[in-house]
Amino acid sequence: MMVTARRVEAAADEVRYEFGLDDKFDRILAIDPRTLDAHVENGDFNAAAGAIAAKVVKAWRSSGEFPTRMLFAS
Image (tube, rainbow, N blue to C red; front, side):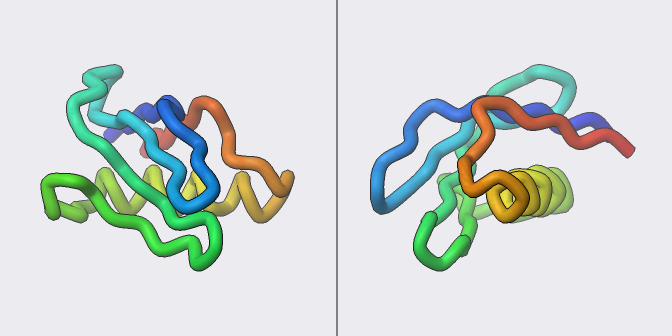
């Protein structure tokens, strides 16, 4: 599985990423920067969403910034 994401918005109350499998950016992941709670706009928080959300949050914890792009491959 390869999940790619790119940041499309970084507001104070929500950071949004377009993401999908194999460079198909067909879904939106939103992360609350205060709580790091993540949700998907269509409500389907599946394995792909969980994997990319975990990578984004890990990068934020490491650098203090939300990355502009992220890749998860297994």
